[in-house]
Image 1 (cartoon, rainbow, N blue to C red):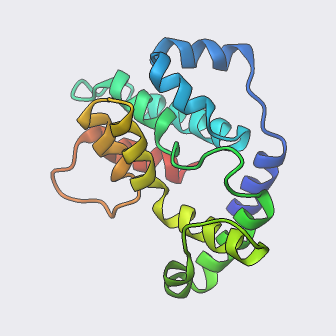
Image 2 (image 1 turned 135 degrees about the vertical axis):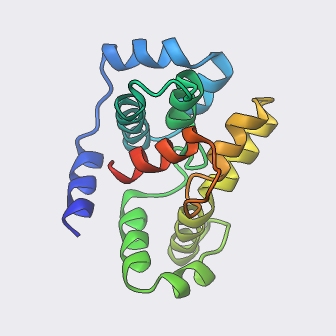
Length: 175
């Protein structure tokens, strides 16, 4: 639970500086960057932290496509669109996932409206942002390889998965 408290504090204090912007511009083309900037600031900061961590984890690994790894790290949460979920609903969703994940997964429902509808939507996004993000990448005409990595970033580890996916999962779990 200590990790979750740190995440809340990080979300509330999130900032992106000029060095981060240069990093984003180095690795993302205009289409990819437009998707990145559609996320809310805490998710952008998280994605940057995941990318920086992934870069460190990949150091010295010749079999890793570092450009692809950084792109998927920066875009892995694009299914979480700015203004779609409130911070309060996001916090409640994490609590639901911690204490009643099966119930939460079945209770979540796409569609906003009332306070309860918005909370159900937040739960839905929590569990389905990877596939939603992959659909957004596909619609934007981005590579199937990048799309697949984003789609699978919350799946259990699997034998033979691409090294970029393994590193993305590890970097995401550390942030």
